[in-house]
Image 1 (tube, rainbow over the protein chains, first blue to last red):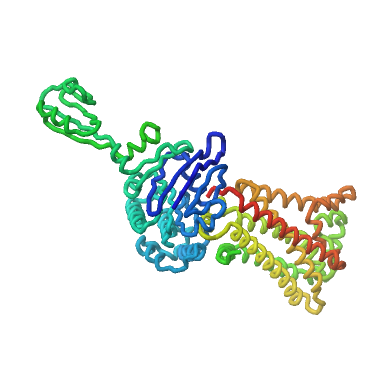
Image 2 (cartoon, rainbow over the protein chains, first blue to last red):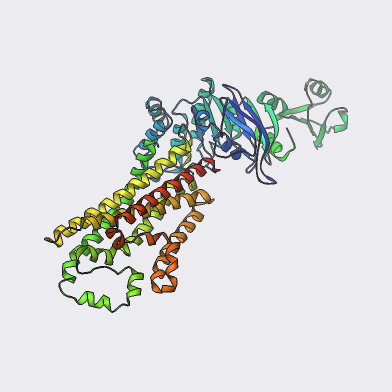
Length: 291
Length: 268
């Protein structure tokens, strides 16, 4: 499992991460979201043992990521945000080297993933397209059947088919009990696999929520069109806006049954329901308007 | 020390080292080929003697030009070879330690069970092996050159070994300093600028030192003053002291680099 407690790293008085707390239980997926520069990668670098914190603690499977980085990363798969590969070797050599370095020389799972993602192994990494490099990075992340996976914006730049493949891999890993920390800008990805989300803004965690509570918080609106002019004042006690002489927009606060009962007294031509998207919800959360 | 990192270092730096070996080997063999032609009469020696002694020493054109070993030392090892080696040490240092941090590929070495110290020690060991390899190529080229182009003259084994071991420990020390500078700087560009500046300045001091007796104190400020084949061939004690001293200094500087690397913030 992953645990971050009171993690603080100050680059300047206003830049860094401050008192960050996160916890991802065994077999759980945490969506870690926030705008660019919010502190997602800095937090992840602490988990990877790359940065020394000024205060607080980051641990994986009970091992301090800075003091015991080897033990902390023993069963870890990591997909970095910026993928820089060692140059001058082929994909085959790279993956074999990864297997050796991570104590997992058995190539079975590696070749399974290579076949699944249709990667040509003998191509030198330096001559690979961006898409091929992303496939290679995904294979390197999952090829050791890790217990804990950390992904730093894994789908940025992936084509839609590869995005689907990545989501499928994440869903499979989740079913297999893998602990996953998913930092992402792709809301579909978070929506598809996350159990909970944590939102970070300006280096501070501003919200922890379950996906169920996020779904419940998504606003629904009802746009009602009538066959004759109807004023919003005809519906006292409801949050309603006039959208035209014969159209009203209702913003239900809970159960929509009362609205439907009230509408029965008027000549309704059409009712359209619209649900706020995750994208809009997170956008508001980034701005500090929701969550 | 990690064997996978060592093997990867060989795979990715083999072309550079092969190129360096070819350049050094061909330079030595070219000069070996020229030696009998230039030493057939005194024209070349007389021409060199028109240059003032102090300037010759500054340029490294010193030694007995009438015999093979002195000819190579004066015309190659005291000058061109030093330039090649300075460039090679800076380039290797950049490739082995700076580039993986700057392009974030270091992430693929440290994302699992490999301790930072093991990674850097493997890179340092590769640097040592590469330096030894270059010294062997240089020594073999000298011997082959003499056997082919100066057949019949006794091979100056002692001088050749002393020269190459002296160069080896000198550049091992400079290499360890290049590694250390990267540990002390934020970016590879800063490290390259710092390392290049330091190495060139050290060489500059060794060049200007012979120009005037008033500048002789500069020899204490440059490590290149420890490269003195004529003195070391004649004095085994001094030679061994230089070898042991530079090797120990390299080990200490490398150990400091490893310590700093273990504590360094990495933005991978």
